[in-house]
Length: 161
Image (cartoon, rainbow, N blue to C red; front, side, top):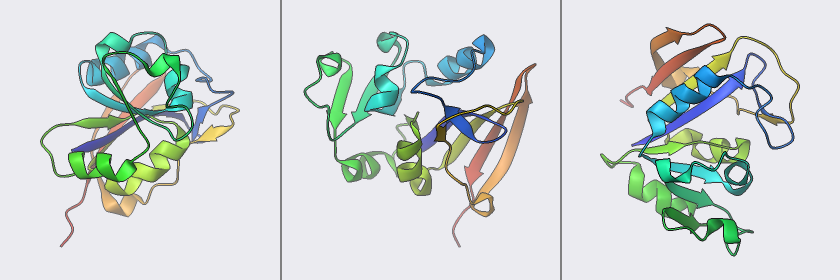
């Protein structure tokens, strides 16, 4: 099953100069609690700007340009440029894959996602990376969890009849 997980501001910003434009510890803890010891997928730029906590995940890096990077030569990191291989493996699988960004990665996987877990930060931010537009008619909101500085919205894709 493919799940998109992201934090975004009220104005859909997800990044500024390859970093999060906010520093909200409780939101990062939420992200880690969901993805710890799971399969996660990042684009190269998002991956290279992560805190160095790679042992918490089984990582897939989707990249066409950076497959020779020394950063990617670790035992729990799989590098590929084949999005179809990933979709075919996880789309109808009981094994979960969490899509963790950046914006182009979200855009490529949005039509294949079974679930969305979106942390909506309660402010607008200046940014240069944005979460793609979602057709919310395709998803059902199943839960909202409120925190002090953000809320998490959980969506499931509606059945196709």
